[in-house]
Image (cartoon, rainbow, N blue to C red):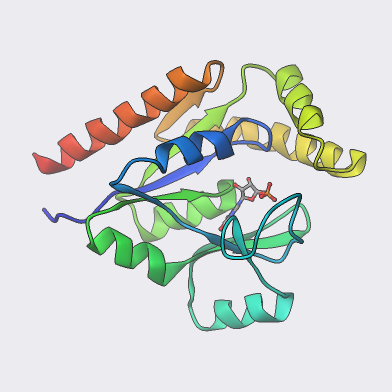
Length: 190
Ligand code: 5GP
């Protein structure tokens, strides 16, 4: 048994409210959220080093070569990866670390760290997902379509996650996830 924090992977289609959920969880003193690197361009008010580390393809490839990522994957034309060192340092400090990543990345994390906890956030329905994605208004029609298509592909993969949580009511969803954290920590303390 160690006092290391949990490594928690959270996935879900664009528009499921994942970002808001993770933001809420991050308010907890014992939780840290990994800041991913990506080759996509900043969206809306996103800032380098806050939502993402925005890198060029060359910089990203260099980091892969240095074994700098816990996992990385391509998603709708761009690369995304979880920097290794920051996450490992936080866990050693006893913090629970959240990786908000897509499904291929989750598979890699499970292989490397079988003790990780995986949570898939589901929208109440595909129609609701489309509505939320359009309401957000940060993507072009083409990008929305690509993301919806990807969401449909990913849906069956939710089965391979340890937990599936439906985001119908935000507060209830966040509470359910906090409960998962508590249960997993208790399991490990035994
Ligand atoms: P977005 O472009 O909407 O910010 O993110 C697109 C997708 O990439 C989301 O499903 C998000 O969870 C995922 N993602 C963000 N960071 C990472 C990462 O570091 N690794 C992987 N594998 N996926 C990521």
